[in-house]
Length: 366
Image (cartoon, rainbow, N blue to C red; front, side, top):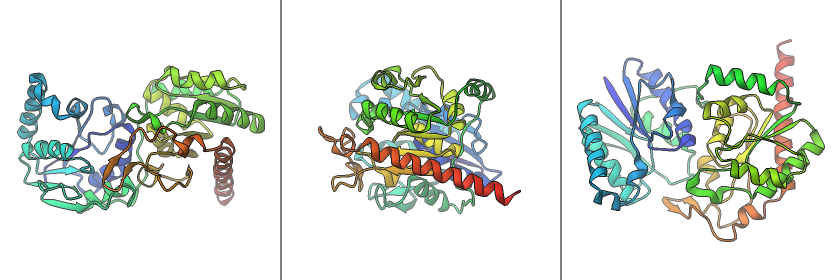
């Protein structure tokens, strides 16, 4: 096998969850050229990833609805991509992705068949007619997304003993974060109150994050920092908080956010890309889950935990083989009735556990 393409048109968090599978491919097929197709907005998270030889970009969001095909410019972009993929003469195309909708399955079928690759491997929930190698899809949450991706590459014989997530590192960002955090009191609690724009229903209310910040500061002191791509999201928390957290909302790049995460003592956030970054960084990471599927997209790695309610309607987003309700219901009791006390207790338990493990690890080596 000389050339392989991984099709993963996904957001930042989903791409990070794919990195163990990419590692398995690289370790098993060191001589194979591995390329990956991702949205341009997510490509930065795989910058300098040692498991990928080239990152190709495609704005899949422009084709989220069939109406896009009525626009000549979209047809032209699609034709150019298809021609380029064909020119590269892939031996194998991998699709570690659920074929959730008929339209989505048709898009993957069109691109996979356009490559001309003789072997096409992916998850199949009944819509994978175009695949030559079909990996059974038992539905969202039957396995974690990391496990599903590993199953897809395992169909080629690719395996790895290291299933930790990979995370990029930028020297300038790391130096900046080292300097700025050196002046902050410990422990450093990093809060991420936002989420991807596709499903803002995943967000625990801002006033709850503010109350969590106040309770933490009162009990443990240290420094509370707010991060998010939007200053509007963190600003709502800042206005409701008494402890005056440091607000970095909208002020850090992706690599700077990653560098800050690496230096925090505890991360608490909604189901989002930064939560998976924290899990990848190995810091204690607590995910707050409501409508979304924690079994499928919970934080992956050591020192991670999920706090959520146990309601019969949960999850309503990505449930079984269906998309479900990305914006949840109007009341959202899964999040609005999730108390600050419960999240604080989960955060403290995770932080304490990580501290005890670090002490035990140090004693074993003294």
